Image 1 (spheres, rainbow, N blue to C red):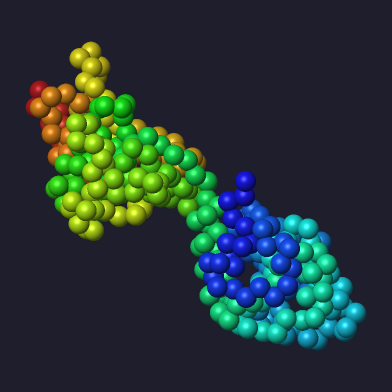
Image 2: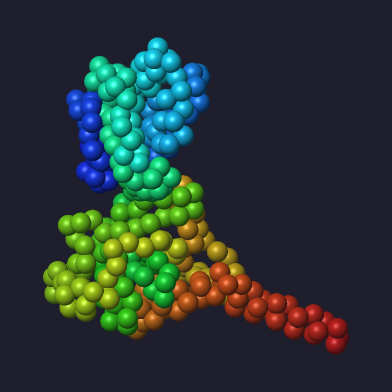
Amino acid sequence: MARVRTKDLLDTFDLELISGEEGINRPIVTSDLSRPGIELAGYFEYYPSERVQLLGTTEMSFFETLSPAERVNRMNDLCRDLTPCIIITRGYEIPDELIEASERESVPVMRSNSKTTRLFSHLTNFLESKLAPTTAVHGVLVDIYGVGVMITGKSGVGKSETALELVKRGHRLVADDCVEIRQEDQDTLVGNAPELIEHLLEIRGLGIINVMTLFGAGAVRSNKKISLVINLELWEKNKQYDRVGLDEEVIKIIDTNVTRLTVPVRPGRNLAVIIEVASMNFRLKKMGVNAAEQFSDRLNNTISRGHEDL
């Protein structure tokens, strides 16, 4: 089932439908847009007919210079089976040739009063958000000091309880139990909560609580870029855990690598504080301050001086 249809643009951007109403449910499969200037000049060899087509001042003024026969041919060629819609900007009058071709091929023609470049930008942002690759992960997403931290782990390990403690410490909940993730750019993952469970936390023994109602609007946010993944697991006595922090583990989500830390869980460990410090340390690393590397350099220098004294 198509995630975006032409009707979505009509409703979202308050466009005026002129003709081609039968095709209003055509699917939009790409966020790329087209301004078919070279096509109006007669070159359709690489015409991206599957894109939303925008006609602005440049295209419409050039169209006026064409002969009557050329106008009919160009508009017939613009309206294809795959074309989701054609949008005329700046409130220009719709050419009769375009109306006739669009009605015949059921290609919706819509009009906007916005400037072409502004509408182009808004449409691109909207389509990239709607058409971005998506996935869902079992976990909790919290905004900690501006760092989007996704807490993962097996059911019952303490993810929601840790998130509740983080909220009490002044941080903001994005999603609990299920994090919907979309890849907005090559290295940008944005997470949000499903609408059904937005602002809600499930705490065993208490049930469902509404974080925004209890702690206020400042305790939640609708979405956040995911920068760090912290995986909680029960402490295994014979397993070796990283004690220095030189080795950085990554996890691949969709097509993006995200730094992951594994934090062992056992009675007496304050997970909220540990995750809070991990977030601050992550920010420091991004600023070029790496405590593990500094310690390693000091240790190597101390060892070197010891050898020189022998």
